[in-house]
Length: 313
Image 1 (cartoon, helix red, strand yellow):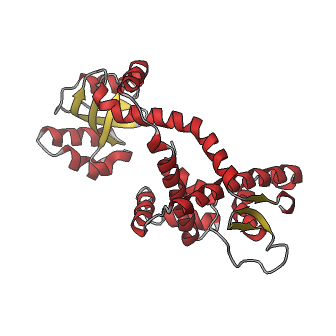
Image 2 (cartoon, helix red, strand yellow):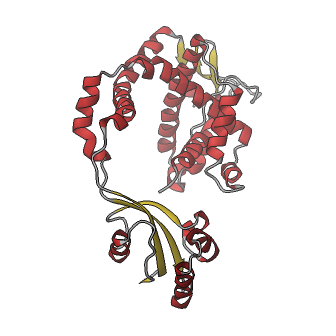
Image 3 (cartoon, helix red, strand yellow):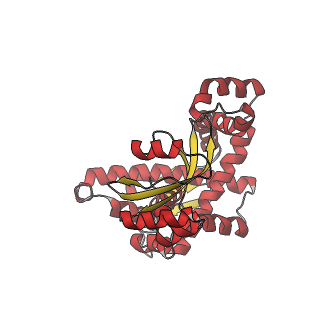
């Protein structure tokens, strides 16, 4: 499964946010205003710049279909109008993003990439890091406005929390879980040799780092928590029969030869409502915010002077 933060980085690159006026473009056509929201304007040159990464991602058939491309440009135009309206509201509310908040957001994205991988995203899309950072700042600004205007104003009562819990608690419950370490070796002789070292008291995590060929080797073989049915039957049967602290015999599978050590077991349980309160509140707020977003945006539309020049795109 792809990392959500990586998806967001790439979506921020593809769906570039408006960043006010620019000096790009010196022809009359390029300087035509495509969108105006009060004193915020977007020129044709800026629109084309922001749309270019989307155009590049279209397949050859789509790119050659003028009707499909025009429809895509119109959809993108409507998205930019919506974004500019929210950014205009940020001006009214004097909402801003501090340098520290922006740096923390960038660092949060970077930590999910291997060394050099974060920069590679921008090279592949021909987008500069500074340009992406400016768009990220706009995205954070929009999130702040929505949080202030909608999310924080939605109050959730204790009875609503209880009703939601009664309806959804099974979604958050879990069966029996086990946390284990794992060593995977390509040959039976190697596995038997490692097992002998473990029986003589050597540290499982250290041996995993040194010898295991499994993906979690550098984490000392730590697989995290595993729920029944997540593993092949032969491995699951071995794992769930072990007591915490014990080491398995060598288990052969088509992937190689496995040794496990159980760290902890958790029994199947129903979650406590107290542990779910914050999640429940957020889920209810998100549901209501979805319903409130359209009317809120419509009210903003009615208070601003909005001009859209579809013909020039």
